[in-house]
Amino acid sequence: MNLRNWAWATSLCLAICGADLVHAQQPPREKVLRYAFESAETGLDPAQLSDLYSRVLTSNIFDALYGYDYLARPAKIVPTLAAAMPEISPDFRTYTIRMRKGILFAPDPVFQGKPREVTAPDIVYTFKRIMDPRTKSQLVSGLEEEGILGLDALRAKAEASGKFDYDSEIEGLRALDRYTVQFKLKEPRPRFLYTIADPGVLGTVAREVVETYGDAIMEHPVGTGPFMISEWKRSSKLTFVRNPNYREEYWNAEPPADDARSQEIYRQMKGKRIPLVDKVVVSIIEEPQPRWLSFLNNEQDFNEKLKQNFITQAAPNNKLAPNLAKRGIRMEQVPLPDFTMLFFNMEDPVVGGYTPEKVALRRAFGLAMNGEQEVRLPRRGQAVVAQGLAVPGTLYYDPEFRSELGTHDLARAKALLDMFGYVDKDGDGWRDLPDGSPFALTLDTLGQADYRELDEVLKKNLDALGVRLRFRIGQWPEELKRARAGQLQMWGYGSSASSPDSGGALQLAYSKQAGQQNLSRFKNKRYDELYEKQSLMPDGPERAAVIREATRIVAAYMPIKVRVHRIGTDLWQPWLMGYKRHPFAREFWRYVDIDTSQLPK
Image (cartoon, rainbow, N blue to C red; front, side):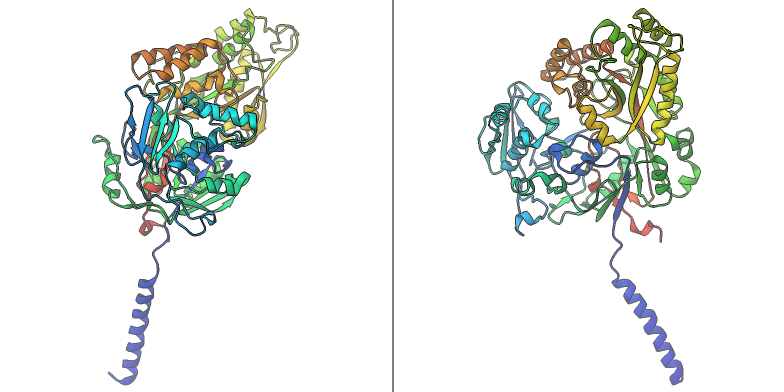
């Protein structure tokens, strides 16, 4: 080889080897989970939230004492901040919990660069803060219902004095030592464990963080969960990164032996340190079409609860479309533990009240609504007609149960209105009020395409009844505020179970939850008695009978018209690993992974 050829060969080798060296030194691709919400967040302080979307976010920032096994079905509660399951007294009135040591809050300037461990006093503070009138928490009535000894008196004292005494020790909520917290309850609470197993609701906070940020705490979440917020464009995009202080924790679960998908996930993921992704980007895309197109264009890794508008495109006959299957996209369809509903404001002069003619109007409205038509047309078969307040996946849900809450009978609806004087008195083709004055009902709704389809069916149902129905278009957060304030005549929304307990849905008509869970502001003494009775009972046939009787009272007065239980269709890209919908938990981010080798170039 002459010198020129040797030099050329050497240069070529250096170029190739150098390129290989540069390639070898490149850092691995960042693992980013991307998906979209259909509604904007309201904030990131667990104590002040009530909407589902914000709670998904806080569930992945904060920890509660307990959570759920990711794969176990039926759902199984497991320790999170707790070191073990609680010590429970035989009468279900005392719960003593030992906490894990060494769990740290995410870094924040408030801690001045020092590690901050979560301890029993933080649990005590978290619960007390909900009861502080200045927090304006929507969780107050629920916590009052649990009957933690001394907590309601502490709130009453604060309401009288204008200042909540956080340092006052009470019998029902104490830190026995640095790592032991004890709850003492007025009455037996067999399902208290469900209350303390939701990080999105009872995410543990540090007192100094809350006191430092004050009224801005909704914008400064500091928890012990696997993620922390890094960027936030209100109602547009939220970016979360790994919490560098997150504890050493490894992927583990108890998949059912007869669930092939769960077994597959378990084999893939067992033993990996969590969280597995580096970053989570949540985009707010309210319209279903842009959200769906974003997924198809590989801009989202996950499409949660595909809107019914696109089900025939994505899953004709409930099978993944061949073009999507060819791309490696995967799909899961599961009954959701929820129902959609429409509530009537019981304080409204037209649809509210308890006199026979008012009850008849609401029942006629409910009977005129054609649930099967809703399932078949706008929902494209992705739902089943709801008959009661118990939802799929909870203890007392009975798919064979039938009630007027789920009945369509236009003839009976017309007869009810005729009987109580809601007839067309001026000959214009529309029914009038019993006193002869014209009337129209107003339903607040969203202007999105899927809502428009649902509203169209509802209007046709009411047209057939001879009742005018008008729609007022708004935005979700504003409508929720107005509903709580009793300013809406009717509104439709969904409610999801947060635990396996069917009794939780009864809060929707419990008078002490008026303006909170009970948006209809329904009040009925017998119903309240039944609600309070079942909340103290252990699970069994007797409790099931009480819940069934309470459901019949709702059907009789119709403050709420339940519509459907939805079927959730989730789709994900081939590079998203480990996804499995949990019926109640929302903190799935930590359990999924991104296979960067499959990402589009």
